Amino acid sequence: MEHSTEKQNKIDSVKIDFETDNILPGLNKEDLESLGKEDKPVLLKKNIIDRNEKQHPDVGREEFQKMLGEALYTPNIIIPEKNPLKSNYYHFVKYLDSVNFIALLEMSESKENYEIVHMQKMNDKNIERLRRNKNNG
Image (tube, rainbow, N blue to C red):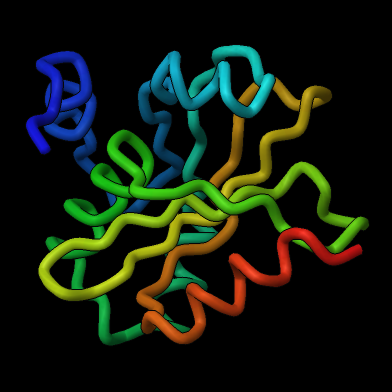
């Protein structure tokens, strides 16, 4: 599927500085509408980058940047978190280069940005588990 110019521009603008907090463009209008959310910038904090690099060393910096842009701005699916205590959390899933890449966002109305809280690769079986669990609760 062809990316729109706007989506491609957002993906291309994801240039992560691994030494500081990063503000990324807002999410796509149609994704925000489907989630019933307002438009806000997306924040990636330095402590999240550091934690992710420790927990998921299989995701190199170049891949991390590319996959984060693709997951946020051209997700294949968006799966709400099933845990009621994390009702503002959404998994943005992008299948790319035969891998599922997940960006977990906290989309809280009370914060001035939507915050990326985790990124990882996930196999199809675990994606299916996320999808199945979204309706339980």
